[in-house]
Image (cartoon, rainbow, N blue to C red; front, side, top):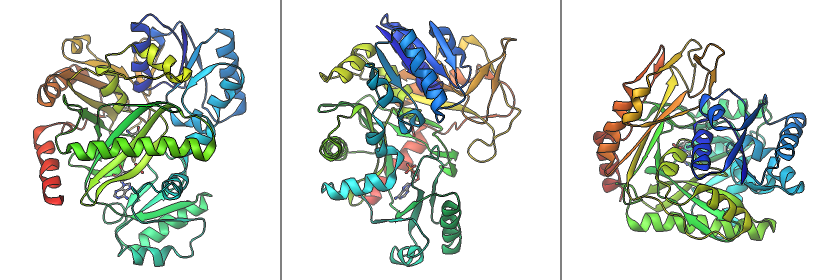
Length: 438
Ligand code: AMP
Ligand code: GLY
């Protein structure tokens, strides 16, 4: 089969690897010259982004010219701009929902309303705003324990939390004002306390197959402080749960994904074909929904695809053909740590360099992200994440050690890694936190 992979981060690099491993041909659409994808692709095109109709049409023409059987969309932007709709119209199948269904990610307000309207009890108290009026009163109603969310795509960086990013109500209201100025609607919701986890499910429109739970680390710095980022690293456990979760919490998250997929079908009449990503928090009042994404998580894709024990090309064709059955994952732990330019998340250093010594591969796999392969063979960084080091082993502790051993072969200037990810002390802190909360 001929696959077209859209996107040029570490998530797409591993998707292309899993597809080529089982004999599929991969073509790709890149926004940066990712060396891993370039090596794996039969052909690629480079586009400046996924917003202009011109670029979308260029991608469709490329797909038609290469007799693509199935398109796999990695990032949210092409989903938000209806690339899946356009391919289906040309008779080409797509893993990744059509625009209307991608609202599950592109509008936090849409998602909160969907849950309410279909009686899915997983939201904190919330209210949607398209003007400042009422914001101050609602913040008071939440006893100043609140979160403000831009109601659109902002690369994981549009959310600000009281007491962390917003030190008082005035700062909160100022942020609301800034969002309005940028023509943004926003949602204010109750601040929840607990531990976050991602539970993703493959979905063929009617049937879901759940993946192991993963914990991402969105905050830029060690100890879970600093600005929200696209994700600094993640881990999963050999039992497919996480050390701080109980069986009931996993079952609830799976059930919420199932209810949401069915609500989406009822609400829109269209089948959601792709990956449904629930971002959850285990709280004292049970599992709550933080957000949905309409795609594979990044970094979570690196954990899960590293453990995948079913042919990825078949999983994709089962999704588009509506005949998904169970998808298997090895019973091992996985750890992924991102190498990013210093200051990533707020003020990334433009002069970071990335040098890789291939001996890392005795311990880990490396997936390239937002970097460019220069004509000289050097790899230049951008303002976003540079590469993901990923290891698997029988326990989280062993996988973490291997990941760190792999990272020893990465050098360069002005780079940063959150080394605390998946370390025992951080995991124990989370387990203790959940014991106290429960
Ligand atoms: P989101 O983009 O909605 O996933 O939000 C980014 C991050 O903000 C999440 O990973 C949480 O750490 C935090 N966050 C979002 N919503 C809430 C909430 N209601 N309570 C506490 N923290 C939240
Ligand atoms: N792991 C966060 C995201 O993919 O948005």
